[in-house]
Length: 115
Length: 113
Picture (cartoon, rainbow over the protein chains, first blue to last red):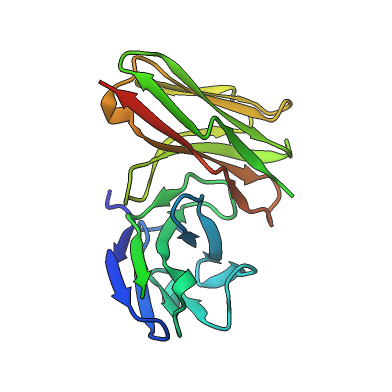
């Protein structure tokens, strides 16, 4: 079974530039999450999708972050414009179940450095 | 609001030692609890998932227990190896449909050869 795929693995940009991250969850997984993990901290939820609908985006900085999950499969997370404090690893995770019921699987993450 | 605490924050042990990592949570209304390991620069790898109706789960040298009423879970690692060095996180899934997954801050384990 293929795991959660993320790209790019690494990205370095200057502040005020834009960046996009892509995630392909495990086939058939209904729930998809984007997390931000700053060095030395636990992951922080940015957005949760159930199929192609948003379940929770309360912690997404909507003035600069956006995410979509077209057709309930792949997802893209965009940051525009980036700030220094956005430097972090962006983790995508998926689960077969609705809500919190299922086992969670993570991708390798996309490491963003903002200069 | 659910809070998840992991103690200790860091642990260093000699190879071969048996060890216990602790995870406590404030709201016992949970659906499940999952243990992950995270290697530097990598994503999280699932180790064990315990449903709220279960008391423990085992996989190889790992054993995770769950005591919902007291809000505690432990991850037991037998005969530790240098390859076990990583950060271990516990994640709690809330019971209601609108609940969020809550992460602990992790325990950084170093197993010395």
